[in-house]
Length: 182
Image 1 (spheres, one colour):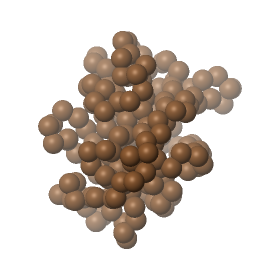
Image 2 (cartoon, rainbow, N blue to C red):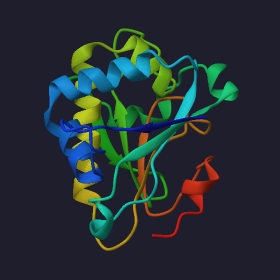
Image 3 (cartoon, rainbow, N blue to C red):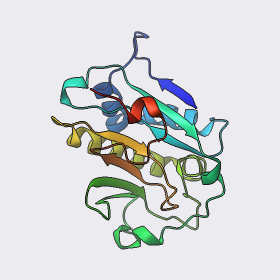
Image 4 (cartoon, helix red, strand yellow):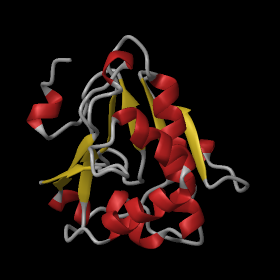
């Protein structure tokens, strides 16, 4: 498990609001974020954030990468999300099968392997990485309200990267975030 924090321009820790804003609109930040994920020594990992809501957006941002050997063996399977993919889009946003979460997934490109976040970061081009993280920032900020939101990736159910915005810590592996009380 690797824990990440993000330092702002003055070396103070950046808040959730700041990091989501940077993901949404700062290509330089997204490129640096992407390079850090690409450089991660783990081949396959889940990305998890602690829960956040409107009253906690000023808290320092943090997240974890949790190693997942099972994901490392995953074969890419975009078929479960095929109805949502569009040739003119880099990423798509849609409701989960149970309609209880928002999912953000990259559209397939030329047979590239996007089975999980690690492979996506290594195999996607810059434009598609930027599009994914921009949409994560937009969707997460839209989801912020009175109730907590859990932002993560997992991938053991469907072997195609999908970022999950949920009102519960479904599939979370890192216990301090899974059991966090705001």
